[in-house]
Image 1 (tube, rainbow, N blue to C red):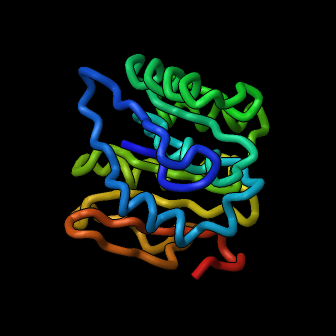
Image 2: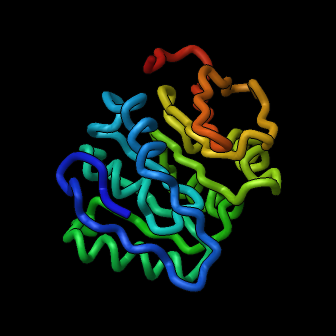
Length: 190
């Protein structure tokens, strides 16, 4: 897998070994960042269920100010660290947390973290996408202009809206969907 655009364009991203990680196809990552492109530069990003860290690395390559990588698997965390080292990405620009996503939201809230972009790539068919979205809303970790993107299988049901967030766009690539959410009453990328 490679970084698609920006500072680290065409550089290789390694995948974790011995872990059931589903790499996001390049065309899907390219489409995602094509949609949110103008919002990435200077943003603080949360890459949840980070796997190899491809989403967060792509965000850094395109000008994100800071990325928090979140995954509970030790092998994924080791791979993210290796990828960041191989790309010579400065440690001030990243935080890496090895923890269950739901527990991590509480920790991030206690640290008063606020994210402009939240990227979720949870396991398919386990309602993890829906649960993650609901749990995210329970914690004060998103900015007023946060964009939340969930990669999910077409058969995974997601809510159209919750109390403070609402979906505004879904794009489909075969069996894979990207659903975009916003904090209520914000401007939208088109």
